[in-house]
Length: 265
View 1 (cartoon, rainbow, N blue to C red):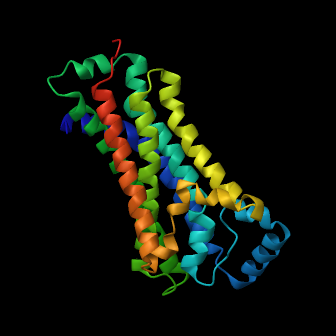
View 2 (view 1 turned 30 degrees about the vertical axis):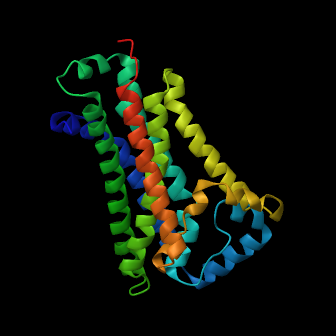
View 3 (view 1 turned 60 degrees about the vertical axis):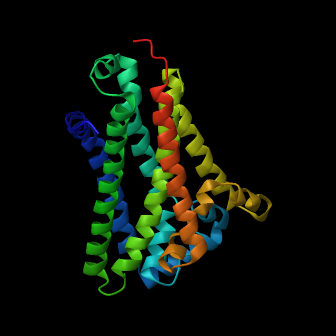
C-alpha cells in the first residue's frame, strides 16, 4: 500500500461517503421510529393492499421484533441500493477518473508496481464502506436505545450488519473488476454497476409472485440472510462468507487485470 496516495484518495472520497452515510442514517432513524404497534397495523394494511410491491422491495414480512422490523424495512432494499450508489461513485473516482483524465500516467510513473498502486485504491474503497457500516451501526444502536431501550440486542445487530457488509464487498468487487479490466471509459464506469443493478432487479422480481420465485435461486443477493446470520444458522453464515470471498476474489482479479492492461497514456 502507498500511504501518501491512500491518504490523498481517502480525503477525496470522504465527501460522497459522508453524504450517503447521512442519508442511510436518516432512513435508519425514521424506520426505527416507525416501530410502533399502531403504525404497524397501518403498514400491514398497506402491505395487504399491495403485497407484490412490498415483496419486491423486501418488505413482505414486518416481523415481530425491532431487529426483524429493521432488517425487513431497511436491509431488504435501501441498504443494497444506497451503498451501490456509493460504490459506483468511489470506483469511478479511484479508477476510471484517473484513466479518463490521464492522471494515471503520473501514478504509473512512480517507482511502485501497478498491483501495489491499485491495492492502495482498493484499500480506500474498503475503508469507506467500513466507515459507512460503523456509522450506521452506531446510529442504529443509539437510536434504538433512546426510543426502545432493551428492544435491540447489540450482538444481533452487529451480526446482521456484518452480513450486509459482506454483500457490499461483493457489489464492490463486481464494480471494481469491471473498472479495472474493461478498456472503454464508459464500459469501465458502468458495466459493473449495470450487472449489480441487474442482480437487484432479479431479486426484486423473485418476490413479486410465485411465477418468478425461481429467480431468487439464481440471484447472488439471495445468499444474504441477515436474520439467519444473527440466529447462527450455518447456511446463512456460509452465504455471507461466500459473498465476501467472491467480492475479494473479484477485487483481486481486477487488480491482476489492471496490472496486465495496456494503457494508452
